[in-house]
Image (cartoon, rainbow, N blue to C red):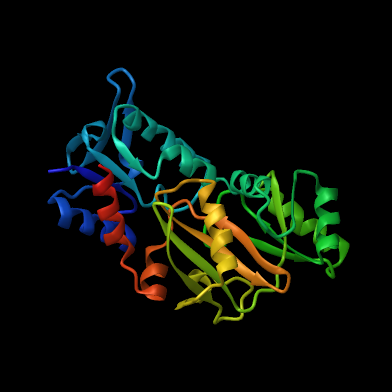
Length: 296
């Protein structure tokens, strides 16, 4: 019997669904909350404390990282660092912590995508208030994004038609929480953006996140819904190029159609099971479990 643990958020649908799929295949079930994991370098053990028992994760055959924390922050990177100890002792981890690290930080992901020449929204990254003000005026409407966030959390829009004093005040308020400011030109989306799903580098399908609430973003948190979508070969090709840069075991590439052609927003560190199921009808958790077992 292979012992494969699922790192995620206990009680959350995607985590539990993946744990169910692994248990069905192996008879073993372990959902791991990283806040209860301790690294002991004197014994080179990575211990998970659960219901009074201590489990050394280095003794497992594999680990699947479905979610490393409820929200992204620099501590998320620290949790991934801990997992490198298990990986160094032969535990197979899906996806590799080093690969996920490059996607958790929005700036790292953006730099890699741009170096490869992939189409992205105009972006300025700065710590300088005056440069940020000039960027807002140049973009007309700018989205300020935290370097560590998911589902549009913490993002704000600042418009150039606001009074200069108001623009400066909003930027200063944003920078009080985010020293390095990641500023993107606000794109006029056609009411939806796309998630292209990949497993082991193979394209599975595409779902759309459709805006239903009139908000500027299409996230489910903001009232969007999932729908099936058939993308062009150009969009699939761009998404394939984007995900190839990171070699994730399971991921989703977020793309939007614009008047100037497709643009890439990001490659997901974990990928979305719900969008795959509701939008495409794909049971991604089951497919992922089978993929992992074949690799192990």
